[in-house]
Image (cartoon, rainbow, N blue to C red; front, side, top):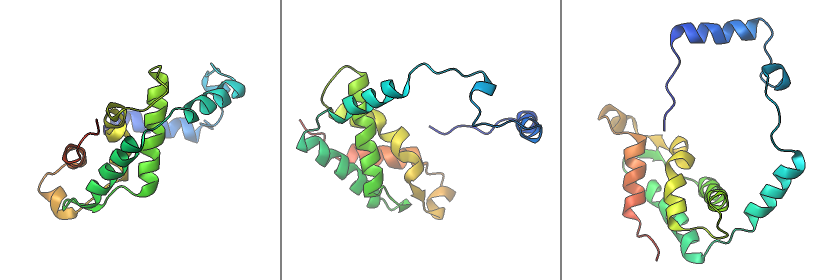
Length: 147
């Protein structure tokens, strides 16, 4: 998913707020209140770390990352760090879905949003109109889903 740039008027409004002293780190000043305590967050992190991942699913994550590195449209594929991020988001998704294990569907559901910004397109692919999303889909679809 690619977020669009705001219209010119909205960009001017953003800069005006910053010029007037807006501090994006001052959450209370922006009217944002906490819905979870630091202890709640720590408990969630602990719970997510307990979500199990079968060896076949670990291999699936690695194979998706490796498939991006083989794409002729990319100058930069997913690194091991990117694969780690996909594993982490997949575990969190499984936990949020009420499960204590990761499925290949969890990995597929999070792959675009976790990995797309980590890919570097070759200029010639961009000129041909190839999108990062299409390249990532092709890489994901090239990897057999573990059963």
